[in-house]
Image 1 (tube, helix red, strand yellow):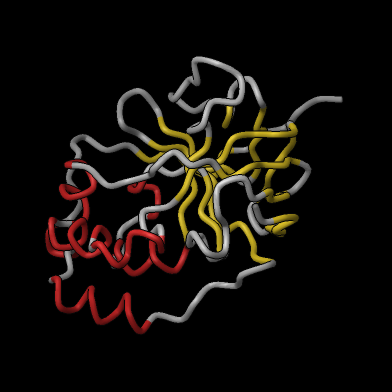
Image 2 (image 1 turned 180 degrees about the vertical axis):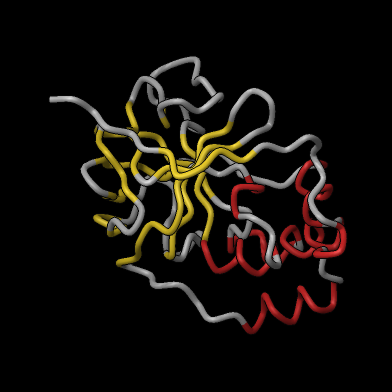
Length: 196
């Protein structure tokens, strides 16, 4: 059976920066993060799928295969070994929309964007999630922002998501490792099968 992976569009960045006119100030970010509508906790959905290219470009997919050997197929990140802790990067849709402030969600560089709560209480390391025909496990590998994140969304955004009391909320996202190979598509259900 042939495997079909369809790309919606290819998006390229000529530099690491986003649009500075879209960067939100810290007070606005703090208020919006504290008052945001919370994502579902048990059953969510996939809102976007991306792979990262060598030139800092991004490809958006309607469907993509995830494997134990490669993580997200076609992604520039190549895990050195099967089951590595940072095979797949995942971020919460609502948080991404808030931080991006109208910029493309591709700018973050995460493989999966989901409408599901990713905080440590809801998805502690070892939790298992089914998406499409693939199964994943949440790892304890930190997923934190860096200078590229600050360049794309502003230093205030990096400071806001990195505030000590917000660290357990995983506002930058989390990492998955692939437990069972499978295809994930936009709008697939994201089902929490077990929590560690």
